[in-house]
Image 1: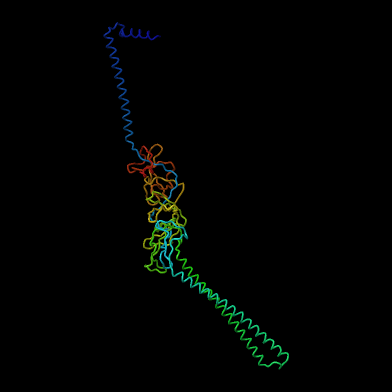
Image 2: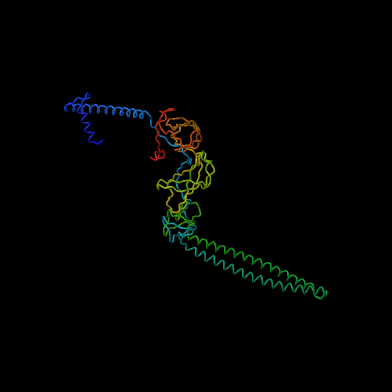
Length: 435
């Protein structure tokens, strides 16, 4: 059927009433208005019904509280102790002069970096050259005495050889022909032999004394040379000059005593390796061991540096109940300056792959027991008793009572009860702690 045919049939229907009678045009207009008004009332009634249902749903939602939750997850945890200490040079000394003299020249100043054996200063001691010349002369004389003693020994040995030969011949003749040679002559020859032998012994003693005198003279000369070497002051180790006390022409006393009148030349500090002396509390002493790696945080530089426990006193001080523990911190670029403060994070306990929840989600009961509220899959609250383990500033280990992935309530637990319906909202506790 065409659209025009429908219109004609509708017009025909509209022109007659329900009794089949012809309806005038004015009445037809009133009839159409009534139909429109009835449709509008039906539409408004349906709209009001839908709005009532929406308001009811919103009212129901508003009665269910929203709670902040966090997931129980497996992670690595460590418990540390933060201690504050001051950087100190690995070693620092006041460089003294071994001999007294005037500073001829000084080659370093504050901030100079030197290596082991580098020349720091040269002292001028004019009388030391005279001492060296005198010691050299004494040595030469001693060596000459040795030569003379050797000649004397050779002469004595030759005289003794002749005397002994004469005595031996006379003695042999007297044995072969008795009475041919007078006994007095034989006795005189024997006496000369004995005297010559004694002279040989004396010559040997003189030579030995002369040789010992050479050793003494050599030692004296070496002593003077050593003192002359002390006029060249060198660096005993590599480091940085942190203070200069003397200038060119300054009179320097020999640093051979603890007298406070002795003025050093410079102060030398080894800063390529620094040390931190930490007062470790008695409770943490059993966890400290040689070679333990630590993190050294320097707030001034806003940086962290690696450190290593190198040594400790192995004794707890009775006054403070702490043990001095030294941490070595490499400083090859010399960015760290002695005197800076640093925070050392000393790890006391570390565990890998353990189940943990935020500390704010646990109500503790003693050291190892606690209670948490878990949001079930159907969004209802359930209280659970848990066993606690390692605890840090943010998280705590859960040994039993909670499984990985469970949602635990982190706030407003006092207003909740078991079985209550809630809307969980997952929050990042680490991000909140950072803010």
